[in-house]
Amino acid sequence: MRALKWSMVMSTLLLTGCWSRVEINDYAFVVAMYVDKAANGQMEVTLSFPLPNRLVPGTAGGSATPGNPYALISRTGKTITEAYQKMQVDLPRKISWGHTRIIVISEEMAKQGIGNILEFIVREPKLNINNAVLVAPGKAKEIENLVPAFERFPSEIVREFTQEKVTLYTTPKDFLETENGDMIVGLLTKEKKKLISEQGKEALEVGTGGMALFHNNKMVGTLGPKEGRGALWLRNSIKRATVSITSPTDKKQISLLILMSTTKIRPSKKEPFTFDVYVTAEDDISESYSNIDLTNAKNIYQLEQIAEKEIKDRIEEAFKASKEMKADVFQFGAYLSWYKPKIWKKVKEDWPTVYHDKAKLHIHVDLHIKRLGAENNPIWIKEINS
View 1: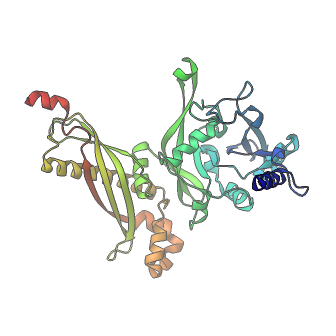
View 2: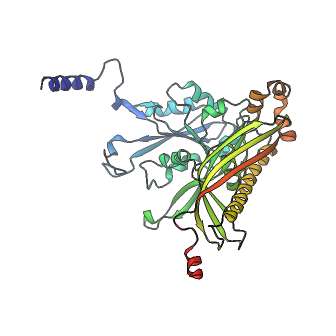
View 3: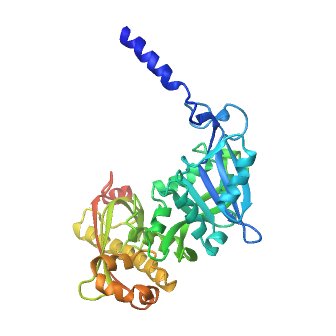
């Protein structure tokens, strides 16, 4: 009993405020930042804040009062600091960056360059350099107009794309670790659709498309969805992906679900600007519309060979696209500097041109189909043979 009383006293003391600190109720927590290009060389910065008075503790997505449980505030300025300080003047709470999880940049702003954005992120001590960075078509701040059917905040849905590796999880830290600002970033899509959750009304749906290629911290091109999947393989970021192949027997579709994959890259020992890409993967057959006999080991081996070629083609397409832009977004130069520093020293200053003219890949894919699913063959094959 005595111990219980002491525990209650200590808990009460810990809950009291401190005169030298800012109370949590005095903070406005930023959960997402959107950066758009504005007129006269300025940028428009939009911050998303949760509204504590509209959040219901312990519920998945309700609010205590009518209206969204989050708010958006936008201001323009020559720098991010100038823009957000304009917000601070009009807010009753102090802006806090400690809970920011995602930064979305418009294509127009990305093409102009994101060096100033990275500069702010590095200097702001409370802003995590491991935040997810994504590029959006049109206005980046429009992402907040999507319907957060499964989450409280629209930004959480977009962040989940990176967490589940539906698209690349690229961070400011990734940019800062490059030699020349060459990086690849997930590209979002926006589309108005009639949604059942909104009683058939049109609403914004946000998804993942291809990838945005950066050179010298400027967006210089894009990859389509197929090449984008190749980029995920090269960045070792595949998680429960699907590879669809054509059956050799009747040209019908078979879907393989990737359960595990790893990618390793090493410079070739014989050729200075050739890189060996080693991919290993384990798959399940998740769906088959083909009449191919999946109980036959030779057929399984043939399907593995077809799937390996499909993965090789995707990787090669992503690699070629980056070469065309002279953007070493997969950091092959870094591998060269680690394993062949003498060669790297000679070509470092002219690496974009060398990468464009001389870089090659030898792609090695080792894929194994481990399981066939609950059924070895489609049920109609059984009916035909019975």
